[in-house]
Length: 304
Image 1 (cartoon, one colour):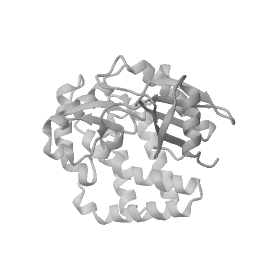
Image 2: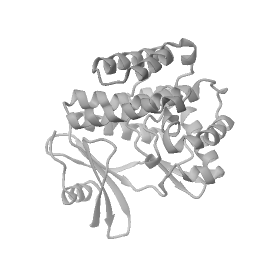
Image 3: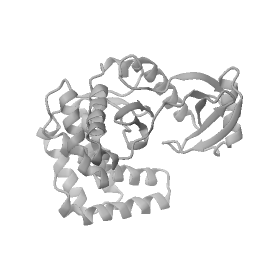
């Protein structure tokens, strides 16, 4: 993979992408993918921009699909979305894209414990995403999965993870039982964000002002968008968020949503392991194996 671009290189790309922009300050930010460079750019008119530049062709395709999707979603959702305002060609092919920084600060899950209004607003925001027409995902060329297809994909991932020999047996048994309980997978597929975590949700007060990083959007299991709230310190907030979600959703409550969300959160560690194996990165493999061991150690406190 090509080396990361410098702050100055990203500022130059932003200036080339937006006519008349004169950068005066640049701050590198951590992108959600390791094959994308990103930075915040402040210009001479006190505007703040986000520039993202892919390092690989696959990353460029993801960014382009995301840009097409968010352009189509902006009139459907009650919060802000990144809208591309300029692009600049890259020497190796593809393009860097630039959009305005959305208002708000990234959500810190502990905030939800003491601010029921924000928990309700977050649930309503997720419901708005899940109520989007599936054709918007299809038109952007992003994946569409039926419920059984999605379950079988999860089962195939489980088999691959088991093949590494690094997943504790108790976890494998737990996951196999969960995936093979067909009744728990009779969900109604819907549009999901696919990478919903606190840093991708922007808030002001008790309002959700924006949602960013849409490259993993798809039609699939609604439970995936609650995975980040179903494990760890954020888990106590899930009830309040689900209450807001149920009140705002057009679909009846899914009795197994919480269970699949927990499975999705746990299985994210298996995907991290598989990433380490596929990239031959021993550090990632060891990191994932340790997290899996820690998860296994706490299973007695983690009922479905």
